[in-house]
Image (tube, one colour):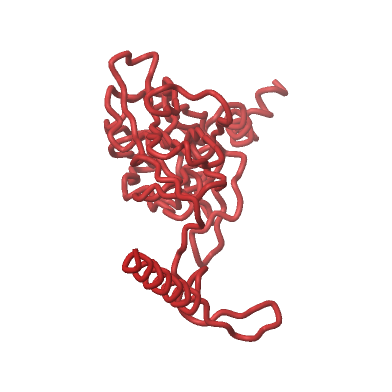
Length: 304
């Protein structure tokens, strides 16, 4: 009898207690997936809109970092997360129906940098904007999104570190880098010298969903004509093979002069006007000496 009276007097309390025991904020969680590079893909979550009363909204996160506000993508935040301009490949659709809101994150032409852990969260925002000032405890389950490499990744690998002339001076410490996106399965990068794989003075690192293979060496005259190339292969796609390369190395036995213009300040603050590592006066003097040498040599020939 006492139990009946309690239930009759406080039905709402029991309903709220029941809601706390389950994840009632998100009715549908985003799902983990593996998608082939270049395909379009969507992640979806459905939220109970009663939890958005007041200054709250639904946001998407990648690897725990917020990159959206309601149905708008924060391109700056996403670029910081991915390490590159998202190029308007990310969009969000929002459909409200009664007490439910459906939020869909659509990624066009997925790339390796899109791989990561995605989640729907409820953010708090100030009255005058939809800036996320704090993530609440209301979060969906985490969806792990993996991008699978196809048999052709046209923009990778990328070789950086030398310009088109590939000209360096003797004794220069040269550092060249081979870059590729990270995907599943991860590609293998390899530097080559005249087609022969290199193994020494090479370092590898990962950053912003990219794989970097760095080769360093000290330029010598014997390196003249050397061709450096980097190959990208995959143990999963045995037919996949891409590469990048530089022009043949040109090693010169003198400093590589880069012309400059405009005034510069020395250590004491006075202005100087550098034009290059070698001044025009020194070049003129060298030319005059050469002409005199030719004249003396010409007279020598005439006398013989």
